[in-house]
Structure formats: structure tokens, C-alpha cells
Amino acid sequence: MSTDVFTLRNVDYSEKGIELEIIVEGQIRLQTVIYAGIDYQGEKWYYTQEGHQYILDARRGRVSQRFVTGYLDKIPVIIRQPIATGRDVRYKENHLYFGEIAVAERGYKKELFVVLMKKTNINIVWNFYWLEDGKIPHSVDVLYRTRRAGKYLRGR
Image (cartoon, rainbow, N blue to C red; front, side):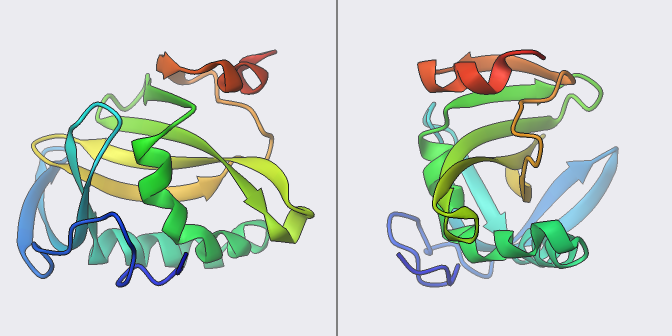
């Protein structure tokens, strides 16, 4: 599968270029759509140019996270088939979708990744990163989980 976010399969590019207004922390922010998708519950979500740039900047800023940009094609897969989902107890609009990715840079070991979605008036992908400690954080109220999520919840 291609890691180019402009040529992915199984996503909808029909709204590409449309500007959406999302409310974040009480402020309106414009977001330009790259593609849309459907999550595991059938809800529509958007991947935007602004979110894409934020992910690139944030991951390049941390040496241990730089390899993450090679796995942007996994975002729709994680959102469609997460092993767990949750809501950040401190920031209620932050919903997290957890998924495993076999990472070449780590000997194809399955690692835990998270897609952070802002769920306000519109669902927008806000961030994507590798959970370096391999555990779902205590600050997440787990809403959905599969059996595979169990090993990431132990000891929290």
C-alpha cells in the first residue's frame, strides 16, 4: 500500500479541497480536506492538510518518532479496525483509536500506534504517533476494546 496520503485505496477523495470549520477549544479553525473515511462505528471522519502537516512536523521533531511518517497509510485501517478506542479524560473532545503496526524499523515487531481524533462538530484526524512504552495511557477512558488490546492494558 502506498504511504502517499493522496493515493490511498478505500478512502473517499470526493471532498478533497473543501474547507471545513472545526471548533477546537472554543475557537473555529479552518481545515482543508484531503480525504474522508468511515470509522468502526460508521461515523464519518476527515484527514486534512492542516492535520497532515501537524503530524509531519510533530514526528520529525522527535528523533524516536521520525519513522512514523512512513506509516501514514495505516491511519484509515486503524480507524476502521481499531484494537481499542478511548476518550482522553482531560480533553473530552480527544478520541483515540489504537492499532498495531508491524514496523520494519523495529524488526517487523508489532508496535502500538494511536490516531488522535478531534470529535467536535466534525471528526478530524489531529495526530498520529507511536506509543513508545507500548501501553494505553491511564488518562484514557477505554470505550471499546478487542482481545488483542489486553496486553496493552495490563499494568495500567
